[in-house]
Amino acid sequence: MLLDTCALLWLTGKHGNLTRETLSMIEESPSVYISAITCFEIALKCKSGKLKLPVTPKSWLDLVLEHHDISVIEISGDIALASAELPPYHKDPCDRFIIATAKIHDLSVVTADENFKQYGIKILI
Image (cartoon, rainbow, N blue to C red; front, side, top):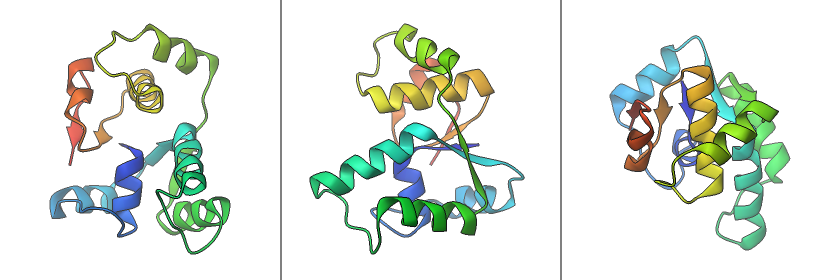
């Protein structure tokens, strides 16, 4: 399963809530991932003042990823190309990278963004 940026923040108790069912699925899943673009998005949100963290984005991500045993899927050339080739249902480039990552790795995505469904992605909220 792949966490959208909002879902990673929800997992840490920020800006929303995951359902109990989805939280249990995350906790019990042998493999939970984020896209590397999520790191970029969190850093941008911090820099713009839209997100306040108690430590630097790198330190926060390092702690959260280790604590929740989450792995990062790097942005490969295939993911970059696939994100550009997606139909234009979704305009957010970060979400397009997450969608392409999910499609290439055949992962469901934890997100509240219903637009992901238009790409044939299974979403969990």
